[in-house]
Image 1 (cartoon, protein in one colour):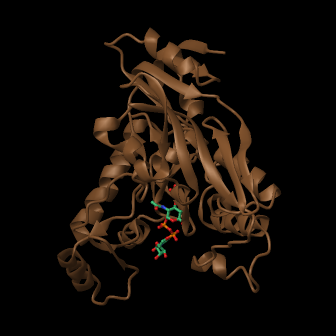
Image 2 (image 1 turned 45 degrees about the vertical axis):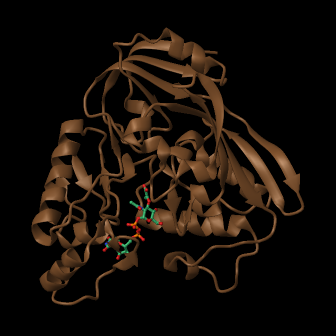
Length: 338
Ligand code: EPU
């Protein structure tokens, strides 16, 4: 079924709870609705497809059309002694799918427990946490290709997954694919990944079930991240930057030592944005109706649900400026600005 609403308030459609309206909001629940909806769009009207809204900031009212998939379903499509392939509807909540997998003793996505958002978006954003990312378990992505005008299956290797990145985010392919389901591979053989320090310290012995890992991940998240039900946010607001040798040397000079967190990656050094923001004194700070989370400064919060997009953008800019002035590092937002 397709439902259409005009002049729709999107505030409740994003976890940030920042007010914005759209010209028209469309929700649908079967893949076949996608080409039909696209055929009704006027060429002069902007179109954007959203997921669970956990990584989005509407910077203004959006006069165009916003679509959302309510396609559900978690279905085992292939099974062998080693594990299963599961097709999951784009509109399923990612954490509902993870709980489903853990309840069946299937491993592969338990480290992503508690991540807000929906399955379709997990394949766009390559969500990641605690040593895992969605791409580790994605087999293929089923989508409607707007350019070809047909349904396509894109194998994981062709999605070019990287840190919070995929072909679905490339500017030239933006909006080209509308994902309707994602096939995940889950294994029956225990394969716990608990190298992440905050996770490892919760286990005296190796975990026996994915639910044990799930519970530990949720406990770590709860200790650092705001509860989306009480304190609206869009999760990590910035990406962890990769810097070059000269910038690393500059930070060492500013700090007077090199005992801050940084590690070698392709193309330079990765450094936690949380550390940079923390050192610039932002942790727990309030600016009007917006604030920086007191336990994880990577998260911008809307504590009383009163913040506007312009307040968020002003705070974002002040944080970026202070990190640039002190360390010469450019922070880029992880949160998508529409
Ligand atoms: N740190 C500080 N001060 C703090 C918090 C952290 O200096 O108050 C430094 C510490 O050195 C810490 C480092 O930052 O070791 C990294 O912190 P954390 O382990 O919390 O992870 P992160 O890199 O800040 C990333 C993801 C999170 C994910 C965690 C856990 C990004 C942008 N964020 O954060 O994802 O939960 O790792 O794996 O990569 C999200 O995307 O919305 C999200 C929450």
